[in-house]
Length: 124
Image 1 (cartoon, one colour):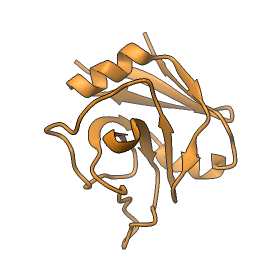
Image 2: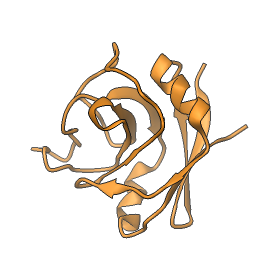
Image 3: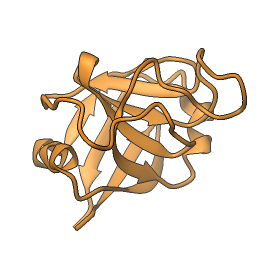
């Protein structure tokens, strides 16, 4: 069963969900998270205290709004537009990510790239 979450950056609060996968479940157990983040094109990524290997959902085929877990960096990745690997308007991760969730209205994050903190929390 999926779990509802909120992601907050610079006062912007977006609704999302984490999927019913083993990796996503481990992320749910680590919530709430408050941390700094890095950008890679129009992607936020940040290390989290979760270790998962690539799983059956691992792919480079993501969309705006995809929340992925990037095993090499032990990082959560939120895609909201083009990345340096993009050849179209679609985001492309640096390497495969586990598909762990979706974020509504993710494209709004483009206006918050200069912020320095992100909060991810479960919504009961």
